[in-house]
Length: 520
Figure 1 (cartoon, rainbow, N blue to C red):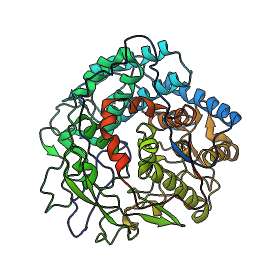
Figure 2: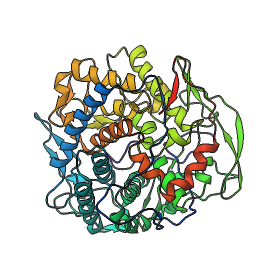
Figure 3: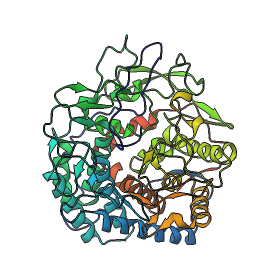
Figure 4: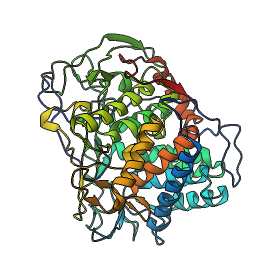
């Protein structure tokens, strides 16, 4: 699923017959060192902590010097968005800003919006768009603002007013009147937690502030602890939790989707067992005959590195145009490629997610070019082209599991998708960024790329979303600083706890034909 743009959809629980599914991410980590433990090497001070570069996988040729300069210019404009977008009253980022007749501003925010602002502060500091002193000061102000927000057991609610800081029912609606039955989003709080992890390692003086917020959350509330011998979704992660009511009625079934960020965090904190990793599907069970393709691949038995329990895992994959890959739910780049902006999948998962991230990006490009005959690529949830202010899910059909009944639309391309793929396919991604800017000149506005374009008609959505701007800045940071935000995530005890899961698994895929694999 994509991040919290709409109210949660309740879906039927998946049965053994596979008659219904609302599925996406993964869940599952465990703790070794408590999450409150400060690395011995850190010390308070107005600095950006030094961390080692990561040796990530990528395919094709690396970026050239002039290409890096061009990306830095885009980064400056993108960071300028956050200078304007953040409310002077609450120090919270607004969800969106519109121009040229689009709705002018969304004076509300979400846990994911807040996460993207924190991500962007660290990325801007790494890219020298702000000094370490200023970066730390901005992050501190944001943490103070978060501390003042109403929460439930440390978790953030779905929406907040950026004018008052109150939790609100929905964008444009009034404050919540009771916490009862309020939805706590698994995936949105996963992104929020990831940002706290990055901030506490980037700015040592903020370690305790960020840790206090992080430690208050127990991701175990999202765990389906049913009977795994009789219930095929037991061991997976619920889509959310309704306060004083219980978990949502659907699980996240696909491993290669954005909710896996909550799995990384929960397993790393020790509040989710490794079962979540192994019980969440690489491909849907073969008796789900309505899915997009019939998956192929062996069943492999893994031993969890902490519980030592064994799990049979179907290492299935789909194939498009000769490329093997583990699919997402809807076929969007967001689902597959947002998590590796912060989790070092390409450094640690060289036979699993690191390789799949490359293949998935390549297949997405080929689908847009060869099947849709678009001049540009980048199918991922974004603003609807035009002035409505609407938002829709876009994706490449073969890359999703959901079949024809759950297919995402393909009528809009979003620039941020190129920046998600940039660390994995640097030359192809940069070429697409240049085509977007040259072929659709009005797509590049005062704060960098507007949110989407219809590649057939040329109609754009003259809007900026905090979510999508944050991904653009993080993608540039990743490509230019040998790992970007991942470097601060990687040194955390939470991340070190999940590293074995990425390292030990081998997906049933090989590198896409025609690509040459490198590591930086």
